[in-house]
Each structure stands twice: as C-alpha cells, then as structure tokens.
Image 1 (tube, rainbow, N blue to C red):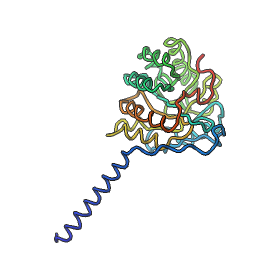
Image 2: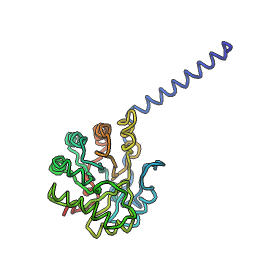
Image 3: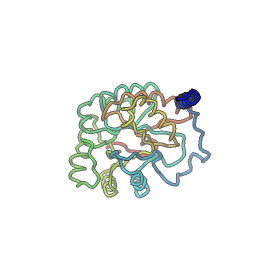
Image 4: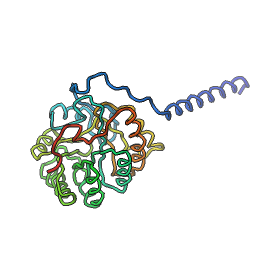
Length: 283
C-alpha cells in the first residue's frame, strides 16, 4: 500500500476509534435531570400507554394490547398513574429470591417503598423474606404460582391452579391475600381482567419496562438498566424490574444508582396502591 494511502487509512481508523471512545464517555456521564412537566400536577392524563419500545422475539405482550387493556378497563387495569404528580412506583416481579434481601437493603437505605409481584411457589420457599418485605412497608401482589402465560386459558387453570392457589399461599405466609395482580409477560385477556375484578383484584401492568430480564446478562448491565429508566422516566410512571427469575445483581445495583438520581429530580417514591389511590390492597 502506498505511504499516503496507508496514512489515510490509519487516520480513518484513529478517527473511528476516537469517535467511539467519545460516544462511550458521553454515555457514561450522568444525564441532566429531567425537567418537570408544565402540565398541572392534578391534570388527568388523556391516556395511559407504555413508553419503552417493544423488543421482537421475546415473549412479551404487544404494546398495543397493553395500551388497549388500560383504555378498555378504566379503574381496573393500569399502566401508570392517572395524573402528572412528580411520583414514581418501582415494581419488582418473579421473587422472592436470594437477590431480594439485598434489594430490600437498598430500598431501606433510601427509605423507599416498592411493590413486589411475587410467584406463589417462591413465596412458599422464601417465606421469611416475604414477611420481612411486608413488615418494612412494601406492597405485595400476586404474580401466579408458576409464571405461565394465562391469556386465553380456562378459569379452572388461571384461577384455581395459579392465582387462587397463590392467594392461599399468601394467606398462610403473611396472613392476608393481595388484591393487586400482574400477569406474567403482561399477557392477559380483557375477559380475564373483568373476571379478576370480580374476585377483587386489580390488574397492574407498567409504563416503563427496564428490560432488566435481558440486560442482567449484558456487560455493564447495571449501567444500561439505569440509563433506560433515565431515558424514559415520566410523571407517575410504573417501572417494571425483577427481583427473581434469574441473576438480578445488576438490577439491585441499578436501583441503588437510580434512586438518588430520581430523588434529585424531585421524584417521590410510592407504592402502586398509593400512586393509583387504591385503598384496599389485601383481604
């Protein structure tokens, strides 16, 4: 290769490397705090919808289905809070697990209460953890017994073998039955939402999916989970994370990092029932 062409190639490679390095540095700098909305805090939202994008080839409910559930079942199915208060609800699925105590320690450090949607078989196994979470002021909800896709199934399966069975387990472990429910994968039918309401349960979905169920497998997963929340945060968000179902150490670290950032931005942390004004969360 002629010397001039070689020099140009070297300069081009160096330029690309410097560009990538600069992008990485900028990505790791703390983002600016989000500005408050100009809408009055008590103004009702025109609609509820999921803010984060859908990832193909993962077993998650289509965003349009989730948005439709909230629109067709007002006061029964929820994606987010109803107004524009500077509040956020952290929610965690699939526990309890060996990672849950460390997460509870982080929440306790910041005096933050969260909402946990737990799997019945894990509540049985980690009953001490469940009782601790309740005693520390967190809200507990039902996430079925074994985490199946319940949409389109018969009631003697989704209720008798899954949700109702988990209600009985909660009764034995903490002395009461939750009245908040989150369907695995966000998949549920409108008929099931209505039937659950007849059982006294509200259906809680989310407006921000941190995708920690995927990012915990990544290098620098903690950073990516944190950035995802910071990118899509909004007033009265319901944020989906996980304390079970796999390795969750990066989720715990991300929560530890993002809570002080959100507090600096003026966000108050509340449980889902507080956010939505649900007065009764157990029976």
